[in-house]
Image (cartoon, rainbow, N blue to C red; front, side, top):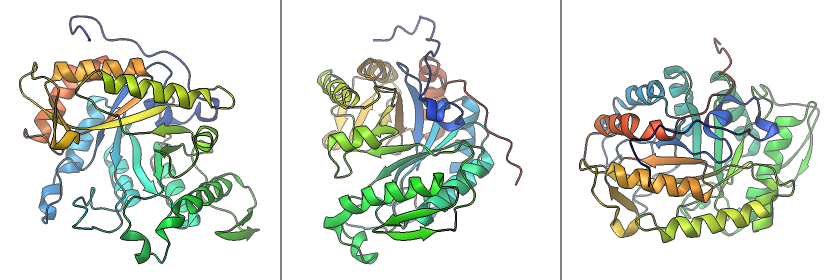
Length: 346
């Protein structure tokens, strides 16, 4: 449990060499430390777009307050049976809009569905956004979990694992190949190249869950790993999460640092001592800030490097929750000081 009378810790450690000069990655990740991000939308769409009005103003406040990242979902098609439209907007277009409203905040996808789009389109959008933001893009990526979307794209849901691995390979080759030489089941390329290139040479790819790959594949190919947190109302969940993270990191071929990310849908109670209580079958955690501080400290001990908090289920106004998080929680888990974003006056 964090003692709120103690001085918050100073971040230490170095990031993976491949991203040593990546502003978004370095703001979010360092060994042994945990930072905080906010998941969008701040309020769920339930049939009226007006609920999203003013959200970018609050994201600008999140940036000013010093949070590490803002996260957006990728939901191409709204399925009423699934009951979640994400933040509604296309993730790349909306993050570009937010890039113009913010200065330091890492811009993260959670998660871009790599199976539904061609890697050329993904790479073009990602490299463009990374350049427009001065190098602030960090990509959580996924194989997709909404079966209704796949036939709409003319794709086989059962084949999403193979297509995901192929898309990751193609995407990375596009980002790195100076003259374009790719032979993939998803297409052949000889001569043309992708422009622009990412600000720092690469865009970090955080694998979400397994993406229907083996644990060894995830350890070898992920620039970081994004997983669900297990239970958050008791101590057993963070203990199981720690075991999962240790097992993953033990398989990393060069034993180098790779960040782990998790998230929670949070209903922050006004009473700071309200106990951690699972809601909606454990999908949402209702807690006061002291319970949240204890959970975040346990996550940090477990090896988590970034926690993305979704506040769309909170009973209190979003601005009020953000203020309390910024003033009472964020000082213990500050964003890291890394290379500043490049000047982006395009």
